[in-house]
Length: 325
Image (cartoon, rainbow, N blue to C red; front, side, top):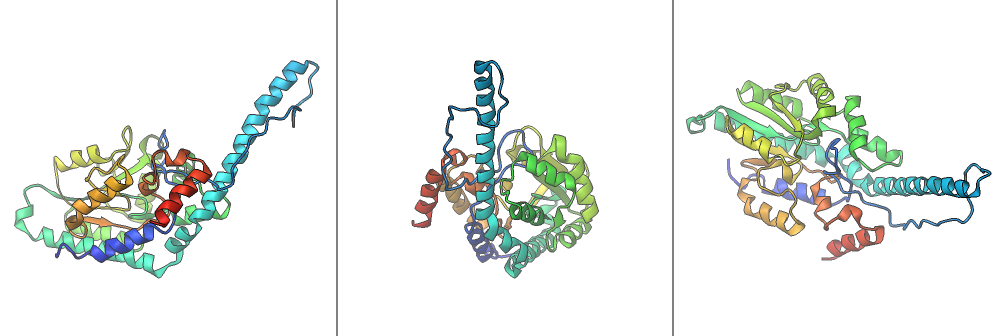
């Protein structure tokens, strides 16, 4: 296969990923990882009232004022969170609509699996690659399983904040669907005698059983504790990649995030990430296959240091700066 065979595919995927700014987190990680929330452009101002609001009047004035203060803060925080959820839902709408409805998204999925399968078949017939058992490594969410219906329902109800609790609830529903062409691709790879490893950053302690059940119901092969490697202590996938390569000749990596590939992009700045991709340009379409995801991903956190903690106006300034470059 020519090394340039997927150049235009990657370009389209990257273009798709630039259309929408969304929130991304590692699935049910104990810390906020795979996501950086996009917050509303409306600034939330907390006003400290001198009169208790929605509080029970007590005979002890000091105690009553104290209780009122405790009640006001959570209400302000809850309102601010609701505004963030709504704003994120609005910013993610077009990206999710594209993934949910467009013929182009389906075409890119089929194209990715076709390129990958052609590579697998070529390597299987090449004796020079038989030093170790052959394997492919792939991400799960938005690589072989499609969560856009669940995300779309959430966005339609005003919540675009896909944080750890959201992911846990979504995973435990067991309603993740197979991406177009995924079941056929995975089973054909399995028939070729190539091992399949699902390296996902769903949080293993609470999501493993539900993930395995869902994958089996979708008809995916090689769904067991040896092949489904979820996030336990480190969201960096490299240690899991290294463990696989000790025993297998990994001929292909597949994913929707730069972190799904063994090229060291975790924690890097936007410029560093792009430079790393440029350094590996010959690998895309030959060893790496990328799927488009404009809804969420590490590209959001790379927009600026601490992007998720910036104020709405600061985020808007960052966004506009890149849009006008």
